[in-house]
Image (cartoon, rainbow, N blue to C red; front, side, top):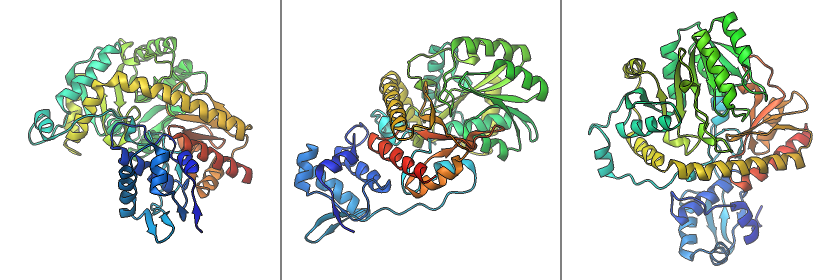
Length: 464
């Protein structure tokens, strides 16, 4: 069915398409049109306004419009139709995702993705020049860097030091994202059959990882009240876990941010128990109030704390750059262990990440208020369209943790996917608690996608 799209309607669909620094203007326009088609906001059969009308409405040259449209025609997303203009063909649906938790969340389907708690694209990255000369200067000429490029390791070490955790370059290992760092640390710290204390709910990828390593999770209930330090003490004394995995900055999925007194209390108990901790600081840069309390690792005197960080939430997951901070004696062993699986992270990605860290404050100053505004917009839309839902207002991060009035999270996920929007079920993040009444919804999306996605969720809820 053919439907001509007006210029005002298309402007609403494209939203803030021109925002970004990492691509040409025609590239940003093509990408936004592509996303509108892939998410179903701009359906197959739609006929676009004329190039002249688009150029006038978008305030760009006609050559910008022509170049963007020709790119999408070459990809088979658009086609020129004799006598009627340029029409949407559509986009191919991705293959079905697998049965484990992360593929179900990260599997890119046909529709609006509110499931993966990641930046929508690479537009948050600042411009960083990477050329052959930069690569030749970056490190060994053969390109293998098991511990990571010295320039990037030094930049990460300096960030930790500024946050109150004095760190040397030799204590930093650059990893292929935080997930890789978590796996590297857990393989070193624990053996199959060991118990690992984790927040409940927790980062969904940790549940997959513990299962793959044959490690037994012990859930520490995590509520809106924050870190249950007394509960941690009881569980450690009862179950004797080998290591505790704790998110001590902004918590995924609840969005709660630990307070200074909580971290002081937690450090005291970890020292008392001589606990080994894997501290996740992936979301530390995304507290909406701009505060940066010193991490747990800077507060303990006896407990051993390894720290995980990443550029994926601040910038872009596609760089696949994270880091692991550990005492030098441990970091050397971790690098040797890593050599059995891979020989180091991508040098171009490390060069970009090092460049991003030189502009760290600028990136944070944009990301924090943008995410805070998107969170408030999502809450407002849910209050208007889904008033029976209970939203835990986040203090940081990219997602909302939502309690439904009935235990139908999985059913809602299935139905909403058929309506073209994906969400993460609460059960995917829960260890021992029942997550059937919860969902996680990522709001770090262009405004037009967020609005349309929540509208579709409201329709799915009406069906239920």
